[in-house]
Image (cartoon, rainbow, N blue to C red; front, side, top):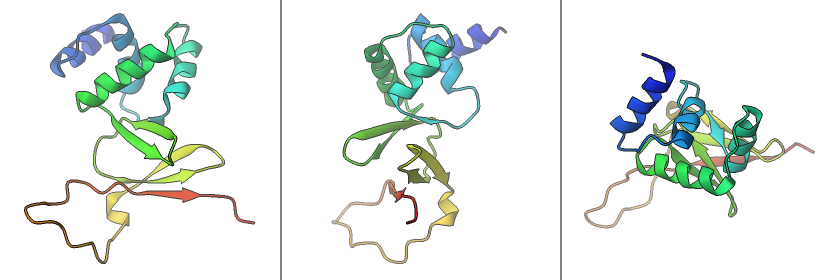
Length: 136
């Protein structure tokens, strides 16, 4: 089976119509390597690979991938959003100078105490981003 056929089947198996743009993006995003990226960074990768795609198209497709459970949005600060193709529950370090997210294995973080939860509620996930800056 060709790489294109695999990507087409992958998209269909996840309930997504295999458009030319989605096939191209899936080759980048789901190649087996964990990635953290902003839509703007992904646009640079797409351009470097010789494919033209608007930022709006990239945003739309990333949101479709997220809706299908293939990506997670990671909010960093009030105005920065990154996408993560590792959809398991894990935590992050954010290097402000490098503008990069770094995975922290879930087993590396222990919470000693969590707040009392409302009745009939349970924790679904904990989003933890530790922001880093240069030492002075």
